[in-house]
Image (cartoon, rainbow, N blue to C red; front, side, top):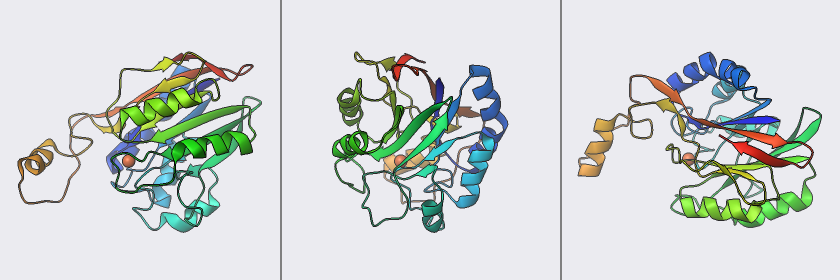
Length: 250
Ligand code: FE2
């Protein structure tokens, strides 16, 4: 089974790009299952309409992260949509859910969203404990995890903790892809960060001049999306459905 994990969709124009490219790309790669991180679709957050457009573009599951509740319209919607995931390690009283189990290629596939705790504004409960809880309490043939986190160390630690216990784990949030897509020693597919679906020449999707001004210490101004060509960054995991382990991450 081939799983395509697509990096954070940044802004409205990137959803349009996804609509034109994702289905075709997934088909050309032979992907059976597609997971897209959508938490920056409207900058900070995702609206129900944008969620539908990402599904229409070819996503099977949409994951979120630290900007899950950036758009309050999503709150009611999250409870009703099994395949839009907010981090599992958020308080249970918050809307939505952190995992889903879907059928694909005759197997049950559990997809889970988790958020890290290092260098993020909102600190949720322990994501490692949440991953252990998931594997103990949710039964599925295959497990996939989107670990939405800033620190490369936290993502690597989670990867090694889950190595051999899940099919694949990918990091999201930084919008910058890492060059470490690999199969860990015990068979879990791993990459520290997928990157993003957004403007190629930008600072995480934002016009470079605005980001430069911020780092120079200018007065704050409203961020605007960068123009120019759009890119889609993703990792393809090839999973052996008999063992549940990863053969290739590319
Ligand atoms: Fe994020």
